[in-house]
Image (cartoon, rainbow, N blue to C red; front, side):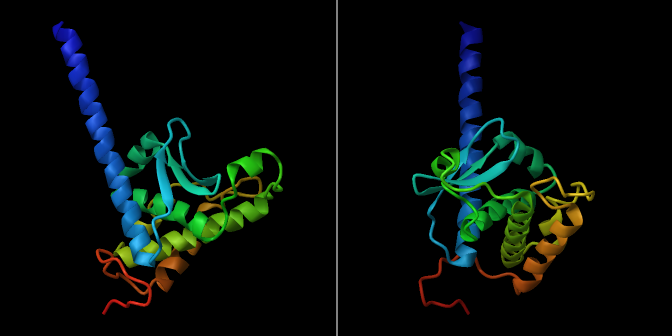
Length: 193
């Protein structure tokens, strides 16, 4: 009976930790959207065993799916890495890269060639660099999520090599103009002094 109680307590603790981590991801998403003045029209959904994060649409709803273990692994370096990944996925949605999963699976939309996927990744990286600059990250913080990636030939990859990604992030970061107050939501037409 004591072992059973300990197992229940352990499971409740795990669920509360999961909720805490999930809430942190929502707070990060709110900060990203506030700093660019976008409405919260995204569903942030944990998804085990994908070892990544992905932007997709399903029946017109925009999702950001993320693997909690992947995000936990990134957060060991710093929390800016998590923020970068979420901003990168928002960048895919904002730039129109995500197609509806049903249309894609039914082959109604054509597959995107690798060369175009790499361009889309760079656009999402540039967007994420811009957002992190606005949120007050340093350039080193902004590039930390990609700093350990391969810098080899990317011809057969969906993602560009490290130096191309760092260049895109740096451009977005430089274009950001620096930190803005993201704690305030901005109404349409309103400016923050």
